[in-house]
Image (tube, rainbow, N blue to C red):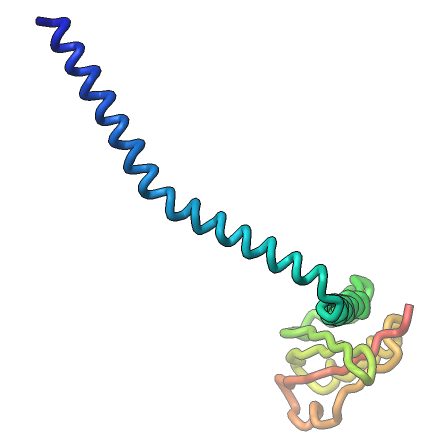
Length: 167
């Protein structure tokens, strides 16, 4: 009786396993046929493209266009203006303790490289001393402080334009 039970259990397991394999084949066969068909179509298209020389010139034009775009991106990265630590240190070392710098911005356009410094000064005299200290620094070619920054007498919001010296 135990032998008969084990034999029925093994038979049931084999039937279940065969049924799973049958379901897997039914599910996977359409995908297999689809991939075989796509592969043969791709091979046929490749053969026709090898025989047609006009497509090769179009492909070369596309490749040249992509290469030009890649060169443009690579050259743009090379010409990128990165302010040196020396320039930032020159600004911060010349700053007086009562001047608050809120922003340092960088520009590199057709007119050249420019650094903008925005902040607050407690008085006209302190702002003028800061500008003179920056002008005396060898890190900058020119320092532009608009006269409109001196209109207010105290708590002056200022904006300086600095052109770094080429080093």
